[in-house]
Length: 105
Image (cartoon, rainbow, N blue to C red; front, side, top):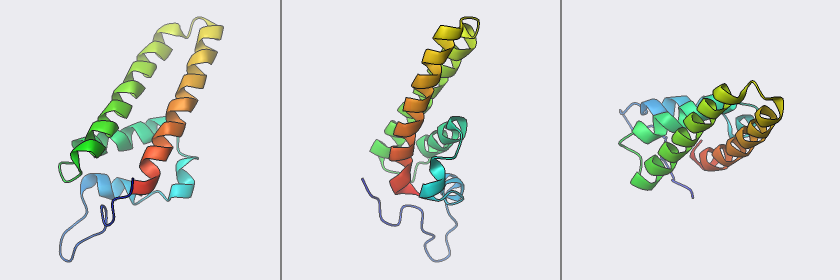
């Protein structure tokens, strides 16, 4: 899933907001970025009308999944075992977001 020139600046045109955010992070650094930052990047992509519809839709789904996990995490912090399971879910979601975002950087 590669989109040549998706974030390259055409002559005289500024990068989109999502493009500016994504261009600040190299693909190798995505694995070091906190999951919340990846979720914010997905949110920005989902709102960027210059992106293809399938990219925006996938980004929106990642954002919604992140929000759902955050709500679950907040409500289950009292139980240590449940909280550990959510940590694993967050790590799995982060890995999928990295795979999604890497070709776009």
